[in-house]
View 1: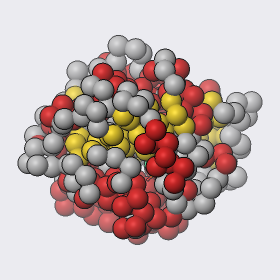
View 2: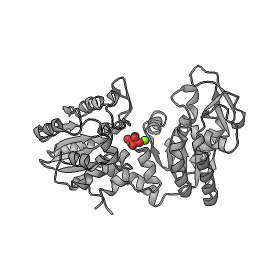
View 3: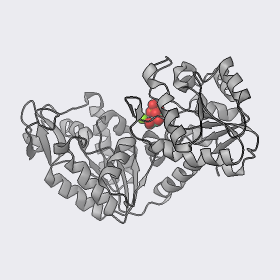
View 4: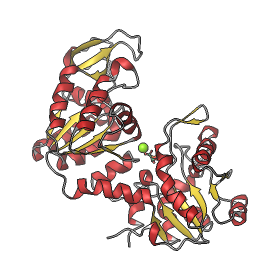
Length: 392
Ligand code: 3PG
Ligand code: MG
C-alpha cells in the first residue's frame, strides 16, 4: 500500500491543514533543539510556493487538556518566522470563532500556527466534535508529524477521516529511511538501547529481541536489567515496575538466540555533578549510596567491537548522563563508532540525535530520525494509525 503524497495534491488556492511535530525542547523562551522545525521546512516551503494557505497544527509537551503557559507555541512561532523569513500568524487557540475568522481572513501563501492542540483534552481522545471543528478549518490535510504518527489523536488520525489527506516530505523521507530495517535488514543487525526511563524501552526491547541479532543495553535501562538479575547496583536508578518485563525480554532473547550485552563496568559517583568524585568499578562493586552514571571503559570496548562488525545498527537512548563531562565517554565513544561504521545506522529519539550530532561529527553517515517513540514503533512493526490514514 502506497502513501498519498503531498506532491500529488492540488493545493493551489486551498487552505491546507498541516500537522507538524513542534514538540521541541524550550528554555528561557528559546528553542534548544530546532531539528524538528528545520525538518518541516520542505513541506511548508512547497505549500507556500504552490500558493496554498497554511494552517500549522502541533502539540507541545503533555499539558493534559489544560492551558499551560510554558507550553504555548509562541517561541516556536518566532523561531519559524526567522527560518522562513516571513511572518507566521500565531493564534491563541486551535478552535473557536477567533481561529476560524483568522483562517478565513488569511491569504494564499500566508502561514498560521494554531496554539498547542493538547490544551484541549479532546485532542488525545480524538473526540468527534473537536475533530470536526479542526477539520472544518481547511480543505486538505497534510500530515508531516512523523514523530507523532504512533498517536491516534484528533489532529493525526481524526482529521484524516474528514479531508483528503497526504503525507508531507518529512514523513516520506522517514519511511524511506526506516523501511529497509523492517523489510530486509543486512545482518548482523544490532540495537543499542539506553536512556533514563527503563519503562519506555521495555516494550521496544521485547520486539527488538525478535528482530535483531544482538542488543547492547546501557543507561538506566541497564541498571534495571542488572538489578533484575540479582546484581546490587548501589543507589543507581532502578525501575521496579518493569522487573517482570526484564525477565520476559531475557526469555525471548534466549529463545530467538539474540545476544543481550549488559555493562560489565561503570563510572560511579555519589552525585550527578561535574565536580563529583568518580570511580570506575565493575557493576557489582558500586559503593553503597553511589550511582552508575555511565558505562565504563571495558564495556565501551566490548560494545564498540559489536558495532564494528554490524551491518545494520539502530541506536536509541544515551549510555549515561552525557551532558555532564565525567559521564559523557560511553555515549561519545559509541556515537563515534556508529558514525564511523559503514553499517546502515538509524538514530531514534531527540536526545540520541543530539548526542550523535555533538559527538559523531558533521559527516556522520547515520540517519537521525525526528521520531523517538514513533521511530521505534515503526521498527518494532507496530501499526502506526496516523500513517495508515494516509495510505491509498
Ligand atoms: C515525541 O516527542 O515523541 C512526540 O512528539 C510525541 O509526543 P508524546 O510522546 O507526548 O505523544
Ligand atoms: Mg515521547
